Image (cartoon, rainbow, N blue to C red; front, side, top):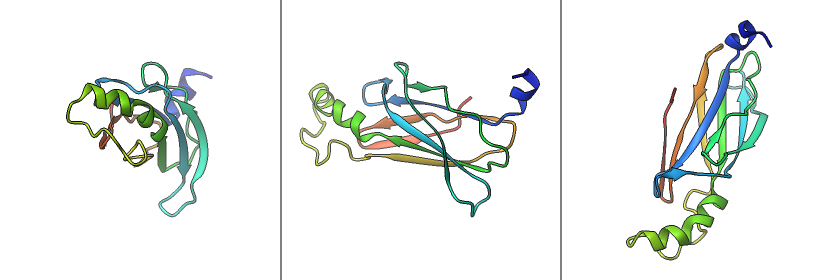
Length: 135
């Protein structure tokens, strides 16, 4: 791929920071879906897992005509695996949770402009999350 072609591609990357322990969230599965137009149908376009640094840098470039992107993070397995550890580390953390994860999944939808790169970090903890457009 030429650098000119790469410069015109619209791309997405993400990472997850577990703010309850101040560390990257490794091994979280996610899917990337795209649509063209506000009323278009969603189409699955890629899937991956966060690496040891909580990052996902291997999502495919977006198809031409994409106007909206949705990242679906499967957070339940990750949060459930950390629940006991976090409860022990935090005196005020609930010892028992119904499902092990208050947010079993997080879906982030955002609009895109052709030719730009979008880095969308997820700041996650057992009872809340936040996202923003990074760089």
